[in-house]
Amino acid sequence: MRQHGGNLDKTTKERFQKEQLRTESGLNSKEEYAAEITAPSRRIHYAEPYQAKHAEVEKSEVSDEEIDDLVEAVTRNKAVGYVALFVALASLFVWPVLLGVSGIILGVIAFLMGNKGIGTWSVVLGFIAVAAYFLLFPFYS
Image (tube, rainbow, N blue to C red; front, top):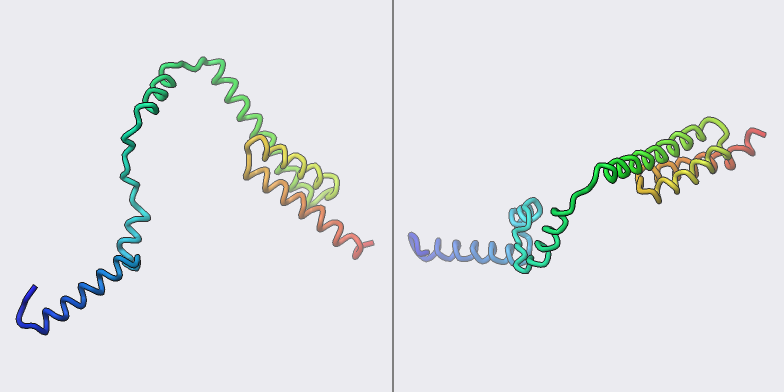
């Protein structure tokens, strides 16, 4: 580390110490960024039970009837979600109490059937329609 005299050596040593402190304290931005974008490189060394279960799953075949049943169930679930969203959107313009409550109920059903995003939007829009009706109704009657 010794270059051109003691003064430069002392500056290099201080810079190295500052970089070391920054790295150890977690303030090194390059290291932090690299840790966020890289995939973990851990390997499972005790994966034999997992591989045995995985091999059993690969050996079992799924019939065409089971696949058709799954596709039909997913399609039915999505249909409930879209109907709930349509009813909730319609409640903003027509019959806010009736369609709003229906949108809330259908949204909860869609949420429970697996369509979490559409179900949540339906419930929120239904609540907005019902709340807006009860808040604005006294001003127009």
